[in-house]
Length: 60
Image (cartoon, rainbow, N blue to C red; front, side, top):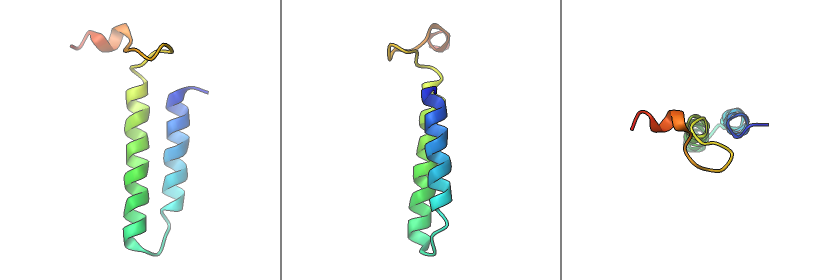
């Protein structure tokens, strides 16, 4: 499984847990889910060696 997919699964899991009655806890789960989505997007630009791919560097 790719790193991107793992982060998206974690985001989905956090969203499901966001069904809390407590508004503050629900907001925290949503923030966590959004963070995992950001990590998934960032992981698209990182290859298996942990460095930015050539395509990601072209925009710099």
